[in-house]
Image (cartoon, rainbow, N blue to C red):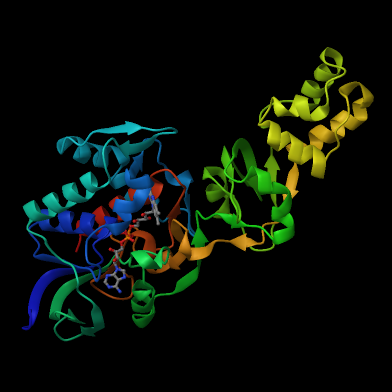
Length: 397
Ligand SMILES: Cc1cc2nc3c(=O)[nH]c(=O)nc-3n(C[C@H](O)[C@H](O)[C@H](O)COP(=O)(O)OP(=O)(O)OC[C@H]3O[C@@H](n4cnc5c(N)ncnc54)[C@H](O)[C@@H]3O)c2cc1C
């Protein structure tokens, strides 16, 4: 491709949002091209959901998203819902199942979703080009066209869609190009940070948990006003598992999190009953029935005590219950973009139309997907926003 190529719509980024936008615009008869610098399309889709892609969530609704403006994404999510995407998956006869909490995964492999999107692009006449690096982007006011110099030649377009995703997992092709383009065209950015990411702990904090690495526990974790109940996983760097990934998106450095090790039960009552029923049993044996024996041993050794139940007073048992229901820990940090599933923050939604995703101050320039300051919970919500925002822009580009 050495000559100048002219298209109606140029989409930078052949990920979830970019491909959905290409399909939608192509189906409207627009001449669409998608370019990506990676060697294959949809790398994050391929690695998502442990290789099975948690492609949407049956219960997705606006409450499952974080953004400086919690109203921005309502319109897009309402116009292209999880049921619309499920219909597309059904049309392609891709087998899937609900794993838990409305999370839909492919039965076979995530590549089923990428192949489906590529087949739809093909049918809609949208051209997808990999191995294409972006060198510069300019806007010709007189022609009302974008001029994009790439490693494969110059492409001009009436509409330019930025679908370059977030910063997480740089080894998978993540770059900050989308943010640079936003700034170049005068859009504001909100601070970015790693979301859906494991917490790290200091060496001293990690020491007591050495024997627990690899084990998990069903807990409730709270940070500020937000709490989640799911599994926590002890790792050799700190804490992970779905409940930690979820709460990490609400966490600020320097903030403690509170872990309820015995959620939705009255531990005080449980311990008082155990004192009556098993007076000679040690505390760690009694607590061992709630999680694992090693968990109980670690907690008794480091933060509680370990005596026969009949030696504890009622007040002491209440204190123990209180400690385990409201156990505070101050994470040292997060594992960062290296392992984060998403990037919080990004293009300020105040500068975009919630209906079309077009920049308010720059005609024909659109931002969709994770590059925008909209972040979903763990569980298929991020893909749902990628599909929905891609569709929203695709209807107007
Ligand atoms: C390990 C992991 C697992 C995940 N699992 C799930 C899950 O199961 N369910 C869920 O809902 N979400 C999941 N997510 C989040 C989800 O993958 C993203 O939110 C989603 O992919 C965002 O879509 P997007 O199209 O905006 O960006 P992406 O899918 O990241 O696509 C961006 C595209 O832009 C291209 N690009 C970037 N920079 C440039 C450049 N300079 N030039 C050209 N092209 C460029 C990239 O190569 C990429 O193809 C997961 C994320 C990770 C990292």
